[in-house]
Image (cartoon, rainbow, N blue to C red; front, side, top):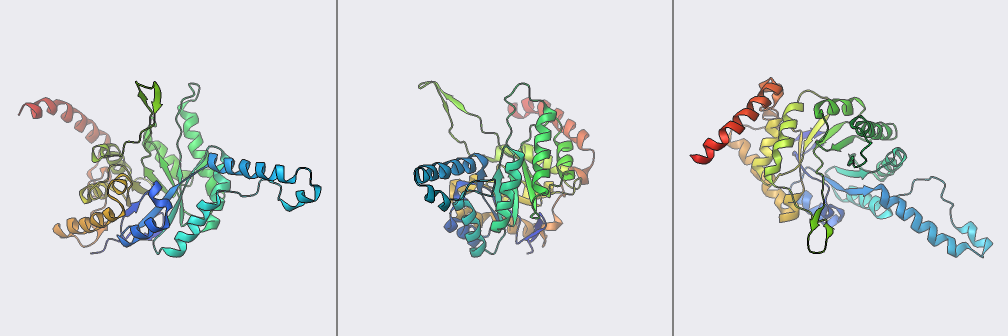
Length: 334
């Protein structure tokens, strides 16, 4: 059985990628994921706010030591815009690259154009095989228009692509007025791949303490429908690689995303629930599903159920919408 696939120009032994999570910050976990069959790993996101905080912390430590001792001031470098990111993250990339044979993808989450470019260079220098831009914009400013939100995404991609040679994927949310057009625009701006989708984490309210609650709910297969639909719509219609994310719990879920047209399939919540060893059943189960259908290469099923193959994406989506709404009462009463 040939499960090999290509994502961001990288050759993966199979389409399964362990996406960014706290688990992936430990080298022991990354080794386990490789041992259990992962095709690639994405490290946890590094946030611009963390980098800035570390810069300020170091500078504050330097100031008291140097004050009052003129000669001591020459011992410390003066911060002047040089690349400076959390050393542990960059060291994790280096150690992972030295220990793993599978691709190691860094995840970057910034808020300024300079931040995107500067930190992307650091990640590339540390040896990351690819960089995933985790663009997270909540338009809470009521004056922020949809066009301005889209422009922030495009500016981030252009800034990074002008700064690195490493392949760049963009992890986006689904809440654009026209996600398809935005996907094409991101590809035109230089994105080598698109990750569908970034979940928006909304706070709850604790009615006892009257405070915001930030409990994280792990995704479930019920949340697959939206990324499944857009993966199906975009397959074969953009030059960027497509990685499907959200709701992957079983090999059947992986198979669905591949049928829709995903080049790679990412999972986080299932690994957080069951541990790195859950990667094994996902990979083995995918092979079993292909074998049961007389298929010996994963490429033979990719996109078979995509709109590119079936045709009339808008008409099919409209038809599905009508049939599901009208069929629900009948299904419930039967």
